[in-house]
Structure formats: structure tokens, C-alpha cells
Image 1 (cartoon, helix red, strand yellow):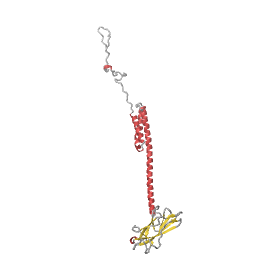
Image 2: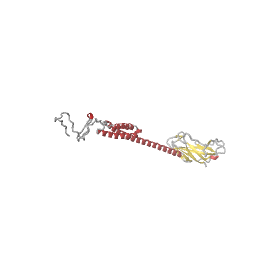
Image 3: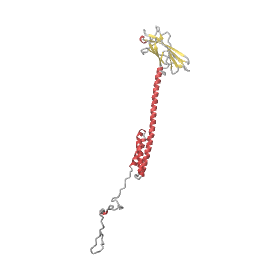
Image 4: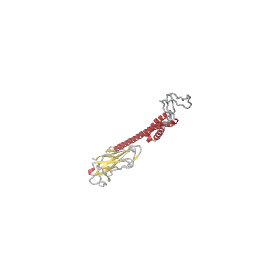
Length: 295
């Protein structure tokens, strides 16, 4: 386009309108920059740019989870809960450290601390697990050993109880070295002055032989046996003046023996079988039992 010339041919001195570009954007009011109209025309942004926020969340989370993992790991009963926050602390700490290296985060020390605490928490959890496994195994083994000992003690007691029940003529050796044998009962006829024998009852004589198998003399504290009839009732001791009965008393020398003879009265309907109980010292040794028929 051409600039209009005044009629008098003078050159214009005031501001002249510039050629208008139909494709150019209009000027912005208030002095605001216009948009670029040609390639390479770089204009300032209309508003100031805001700085981006640092991405510190990963480092903070790693530190918190690391602390939680370490604290939980210190309690033996809670170690199984500590490994998860410790593992997450390692993961978040690694991510946070990566952000710090790229300049996206400003809390590098916090991310490193969370990472280290996570590793420590995992180590504590593993150690606590190992200690717990060892402790549980020890408790289980100890319990099994106690149960086994109890079973063995019961079996031993049952075997000892069985060993103390014998038939007439079989020997039993007590813990003090006295070997005792009760012979099969023999018939006994009390004299007319007998005490403890009712008319119609059956009397039997029991012979007890005690042999000292040790190297020291041993005192027989209780040399009197007890007799139960076939019904389990206690039989009454018969005492007469015939002199056929003998009670074992005093000491038995090494290699020597003592013989006791005792008569008992039995009811006729329970006289076919008896059980004899005897112990040289009832305060120390349980009774041994001899049983069998009287005929």
C-alpha cells in the first residue's frame, strides 16, 4: 500500500500509519505483548512462570516406613509385622533417591535415611525370625523330652509295679539288697488256746524267707506280712502257744537269711486263694505281693 501525499506535495512529518498485515493478530491493549506473527518471532509469556513443587513424598514415606519397620522389629512377637514396612521403605527410599538425583526432590538425606532404615528393619526382622524359630524349636524339643521322660517314668513305674506282683515261690529283691521269697501256704491247725481263729474258719501258715544279698548287715524294720483272702478282705493273724510261729526281727547279716512263719485265719468261702504283702521297711520300700491258691 502507498502513503497518501498531501495535495501540496509536502512530505508528511507526523506519524504515519504503517502498512497493515491482514494476517497479523491485533495489538493487545495495555501494552501486553502480541503473539508472534512470523516464524522466529519469540515473545515473552503473558504471565510469569511458577516454579514446580519438589517431589519429596517418596523420601518422607520411606523414612516413616523405615522407622516403623525398625521399631516393630525390636519386639520379638511383632517381627512378623516389621518386614512389610521395612521392605516398602527400601522401595520408596530408592524411588525418592532417584528423584533427588534427577533434581525432582530436595530431601535426598531423608530418602537415604528411609532406605537405610528399611534395610536395617529387614535385617532385624530376619534376625528376630531366626531367634524365634530357634526358641520355638527349643521349647518344642524340651516339651517332647519332658513328655518322653514322663512316659518313660510311667512305663518304668508300671514295670516296677508289675515286677512287685509275684506268684508263691518267686523271689523279689528290694532296693536295700534283701531278697524275699514267700512260699506257698500250708495248712495250719491252731491249738485250743489260739487267739484270732474263729470256729469253722480255715487256717494257713505263710513262710517268708529273707536273704541279705549285700555286703552290710540290714535291719528288718517290719517283719510281719499282711494277708488278704480271695475276696480281698484282710485275714486275721492267729496267735497260739505252740511255738510254731516266728516273726522276723533285728538284723540280717551279709549272706545270711532269716525265716518267718505266720498263721492266718480265713473264712471258708474265701480260703481257696490268698495274697501276701510284705516289705522289710514300709517307710522306704513299697510292698511286694505274692498270690496264688492255698490248695
